[in-house]
Length: 350
Ligand SMILES: NC(=O)C1=CN([C@@H]2O[C@H](COP(=O)(O)OP(=O)(O)OC[C@H]3O[C@@H](n4cnc5c(N)ncnc54)[C@H](OP(=O)(O)O)[C@@H]3O)[C@@H](O)[C@H]2O)C=CC1
Ligand SMILES: Nc1c(N[C@@H]2O[C@H](COP(=O)(O)O)[C@@H](O)[C@H]2O)[nH]c(=O)[nH]c1=O
Ligand SMILES: [Zn+2]
Image (cartoon, rainbow, N blue to C red):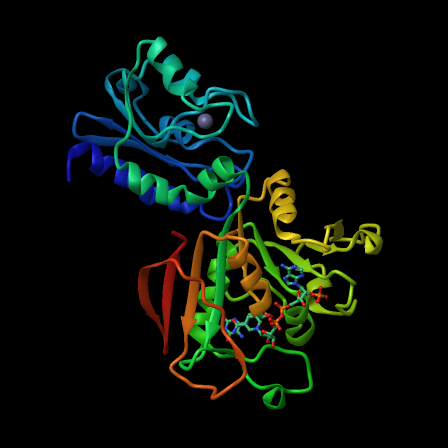
């Protein structure tokens, strides 16, 4: 690996510490190198706090070395006032002579202007190092800005013979999930929830499973719960309304109610396909990513509309012998691994 790639790869490694808590900011990593020594490192703070570059620069003990150092950063430094002042100003003020970065920022307020500002200030800028890895790493942020919708992850569990839920007769009377996947994959699903800003389920899943949709088996924030419920059929005492997380209920215009605690209502046009409008709404709310956990009809709606980026399918070794058939996402298989007794397959949308 070339020297620039080595330090950029370290930027990506530390940037991951921000996963799930920097949004709507991107998770960025920065490393300050003097000669062949790393003298500072930083990653994006939770939203509203200092950016990766600021923290990396602040972590350098001997600030006089900055005048001879190179700053490595996974994304183009910002040049606008957001919650914090522009990173480009700090880099120039400290006299850092060289910046090596992964990819330009697609944010309309930055978009190449940060690079231009650094160059105008006399700083040498090298871009495009580990570009593909940086794009993958920042997929949520890039999709949000480039497609003006959240990055959409479809997730479900299916039996060895391709079923999503058993025949109705095999279910309890009580509303609760029928577990196809094992405990390790279920814990992994909670980790995945903690990494995204929102989670969505369809009406029948909410009614039949009474899901909590929280991250209780993993550390991290609960995502915004998005519920498709055209006619407000989901009973008021159900877990999605328990106040553990914000809940956005998407319903027909004549069903909209006043907000109630952490529950808000949003009209969608269910006469046609409500998903494109929902995507736009989530974009307006600055939701960078959404995990869709079912049911089968809901997942098929996203697949049919082409509104997905990644599918995570948990395959159990157990057969159900019948029931509700699982969806098929299509796309390209890009990864596969074991989670306890189950296999996880990751597909990307072509
Ligand atoms: N194996 C797994 O990973 C999972 C299994 N499950 C299981 O799946 C079953 C539920 O799945 P399923 O029956 O397919 O139902 P869904 O949970 O997908 O709910 C379907 C309903 O949601 C509304 N809806 C969903 N998408 C749209 C859309 N694009 N446009 C308009 N309305 C939409 C409609 O409500 P309306 O008709 O009122 O308009 C529709 O009838 C349960 O048995 C559950 O246990 C659930 C999740 C995960
Ligand atoms: N049945 C099934 C899943 N079901 C999904 O998990 C939801 C339950 O969430 P919670 O109440 O927070 O535990 C449920 O409504 C559905 O979306 N998930 C899986 O990983 N494997 C499974 O076999
Ligand atoms: Zn910045």
